[in-house]
Length: 402
Length: 232
Image (cartoon, rainbow over all chains, first blue to last red; front, side, top):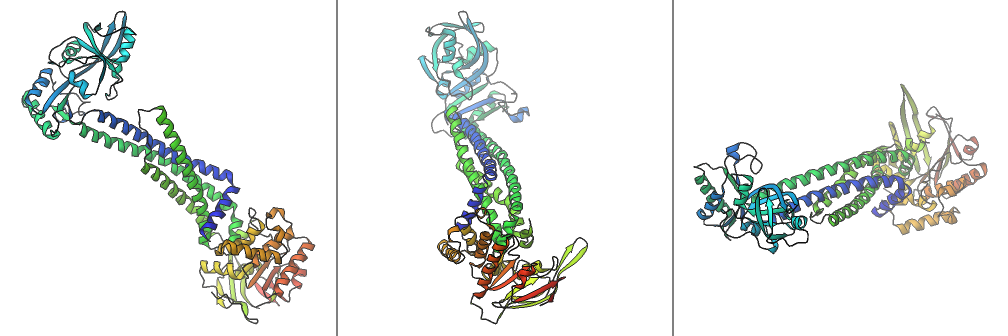
């Protein structure tokens, strides 16, 4: 048979059995769409996290108290630290290691923040002026924290715009005094936007000098220290020198972890790629379910069309011809199903992107290709048995079937 | 394969000691038990016998739809028992035409598409298929029925379409299995006259039937009993 005739013959058959075709089409379409949507989800999560990393400069390191070897537990930042990093150590570090231009120590907690009769429980960040630069925070009104010695517990506060609205409404906030815990802080600036800070919404937070937050939370150590390096400094080199300095401060024990965003980003990237593949594989299961449906439907078709198969053989179709006819039919169905699935998947991904613009949902080309190829192979694989059964039918028996 | 017309007087069918057994439960049924038969080109043969005498099996054997367990079958001078499935399919396509009792038209295809089926399987170009089908339809008086689906045709017309399909490839051998079995007597007569007319143009015709009247019309009668040729 000529390929075009084969195609036409199969199309004609399919058009006469629309319901059967529709069922396979839907099953395959859903399978392909599932793979696409799940991959898009994984890719979206990955893109989101990578964007967050991109917001931190590449010349910024992060230092956490504790080290896997010293605690034996979970690695920082989740695990418990052996010894605190103090504000003084952060300050001294800046002097010891020449490639450091500035450090931003960080203490995070939550406290009751009040103005007049209003009060809210919000996140409080204790840090230094450098933090604003590293995190690309925009101060809309007023100023950031003063650029002086961060060991001084001065009483300035920069508040997020949402917090400003909640406490002050339309009234001007700059220069007003806030109650944070038991202390008074003067509002010197108001942040614009959410701030690009790893899932933390800075629009509903207060930023105060780190020394003041230490007093507020009665915390001895820092949650982490962000370290900005001079442009062109090699990060691994700087990490070694920082670790050496910290080891020196801690009586010869190395109990801090210094990481570069690049290495962290690579780790996250690896995890998220693995996750994306895992969810895609789950989606692929639905393709196999669709494959089993195809097999069932094709088996029924073969038994319904036994007489026709017998006839075609009597008219001179070989077993190969019969097999080809049934495989073409299955592939046509699967192909159309895959096409419908891809279109549906695109529609869902586009819609998701429109509703959640911060997460870059995207079904990558490789996932679509893989889904379509898997669908086609599944269709081929699962229709092989029915097609083979059809091809092996004895024309004599087939023709005599009532 | 040779497609040249066989000269008159050469054998189209040569069966030698054909045996075929079926397993029916515990019983072994000898459907064909040492059949010898020689049919010359252009002959008109009827095969008759009670049901179970093996005449259907013999027809399948002649049509290369079934393989004998033992014996030789030379079709137009070519040994068929050693052919593989592909070769047999090709011989069926090019040298054998089937006409069945229940017509066996594909219900979703029009009359013309049904007639084109063998050519479709052969891989002929659409134009050639169309021309040949039109020729045959004109010859059998079906020209105005080409676009009809089988269920829009009368029984006699359906069998005409089936015959058109059987002869469109100009086979050497036309095999008819109870060709009038599902028809009223008038259409039946029409159909058998058509087959006889085709036979007069040189095609070898073998009709299998248990209808004595129909069988008598053939120039040569083969009678089968218990898987053997009992009488000629």
